[in-house]
Length: 270
Ligand code: NAP
Image (cartoon, rainbow, N blue to C red):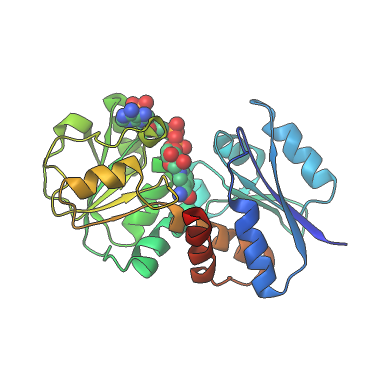
């Protein structure tokens, strides 16, 4: 029987994950099926019960269910425990539900291996204090980022998150220049907004946006480039790298990511 995997979210129609996993499976010569499905808000647990009850092998979880998936799983890897959020679920051999979080590892891998940006010793600013920010603070610190600061529109939320991880917090308006790396983990780009920081504050910084766009020019990347950023990168590479980590957890082999990333960029450019 073909092993079945899926990604669940709400909404889910835009997801590239089925295409990414289909690439991985073809390249690895593995026979598997990977679907995308929507669960109703508040309905993650029932949807996951159904999926695994019907023999599903592994589930990716996206907005807004990563916290629900954390609560649904009994065991957690360090990244999921640190973030309090799960994006990859599997069933251990003894039947226990295991929740993992591959987002941070995917981000670090994209920054260091694909973009070639140094993280060790990089003074790092994280924008946003939502689910995505929560999942990347510890992996960035683990890779050597220093003076890590969380800046958010809602300062109170930044303060809570910063306290959890023992880093600094401030509002977006407080940001002055001087960062080696600025990571945008806000969803402002969904509303077409890129300039969420004071003028001049990212000059000379490498700027990474977790959001992605076909041509890489997300609103934040485009704004940062106009502001004189040293380099800009969007989150498509992170999406592919976090998927590769999930594939490795499920299938025991880490697929090559470069051909998939290149194919997605080519497709998107058409
Ligand atoms: P979330 O939990 O809803 O958090 C949204 C964050 O964005 C909050 O901090 C919010 O600030 C901030 N924000 C929203 N609109 C803003 C605006 N106009 N100006 C300034 N800040 C604004 O969302 P999330 O799950 O963290 O996701 C954030 C982004 O990361 C999404 O675009 C998502 O697609 C992306 N992401 C990408 C990957 C990948 O693999 N590439 C993985 C995970 C997430 P307030 O607290 O002040 O409201």
